[in-house]
Image (cartoon, rainbow, N blue to C red):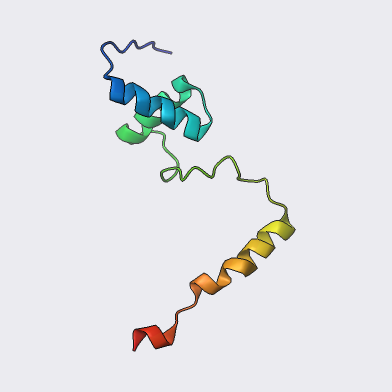
Length: 83
């Protein structure tokens, strides 16, 4: 493993990193590593996070099915609006 020290980090970058750390629920170090991997296109296995990763796997099958049923209407096209 290599070590990296970043000097003269602009205040807005530091603030954005802290906000991203909180949003992801990870350590600052892991957040920076993940962002570097993503920016460099290496070892990144998914799309940009939408902030819901903490919820993944927390719903029961029944809760998931209820959600799918409740949101199914969003997949329907209203033909009247396209005339």
